[in-house]
Length: 254
Ligand SMILES: N[C@@H](CCC(=O)NCCCC(=O)O)C(=O)O
Image (tube, rainbow, N blue to C red; front, side, top):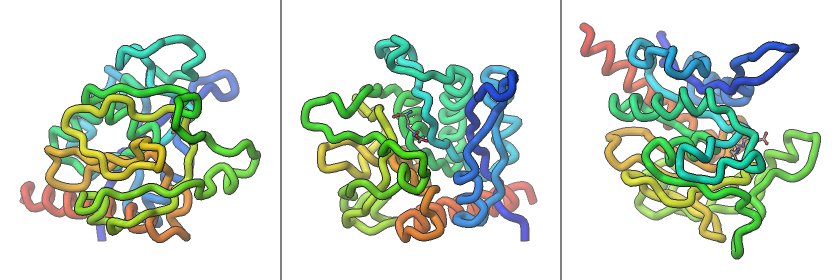
């Protein structure tokens, strides 16, 4: 049976003297094994891309995390190098992609940097170096060469009762990993908070005008999708939404 196809954001990475367009395998593996969907990488080619030609052919969009930060010039922030590293080609690709995908009501799942891109794409802002803000915890990954240690569950988040995330995870507390220096500052118009950390950091949002799955998490459910129940439920729900999109598209084409 045909499986839904999900467009996955890519970073631009210098490797062996060339620019590569790349995504971490855990996101791709989570789509295949957690969402039963087929990932297709979207190169960060910015305005060279005809996004409608791509979005006509997919059933969902996944925005991955990245160590790079959304360029501060896109939300009136301090564009100093200390707020880097940056990936302006990714920014130039994902921000218009988000707006076009939402306009089409395509299922959208945004993770970490992806949540930050969603907030900026819709007119919100970010704060940098969250750990230096009074009253905030350190949300950065632990110093370690072990990815399991870097992505270890680090703190709990409180899910907003009755919200769209609660519909997937239930309205309790979930333990999440934490690998970020930035966070949502001013929430964009049209976004609703779905979960917060104890220090009030926004940890998940949904898109008000979207009729289906349009969720973003500051944490990384892709990493433990094979062993963590909340992670698995998120990717299963996203896969179900992409499958429904695929079916609806096929019906309208018939
Ligand atoms: N750069 C942003 C977003 C953080 C993010 O997406 N982290 C994923 C990469 C994790 C890692 O390998 O360190 C921020 O810092 O807020």
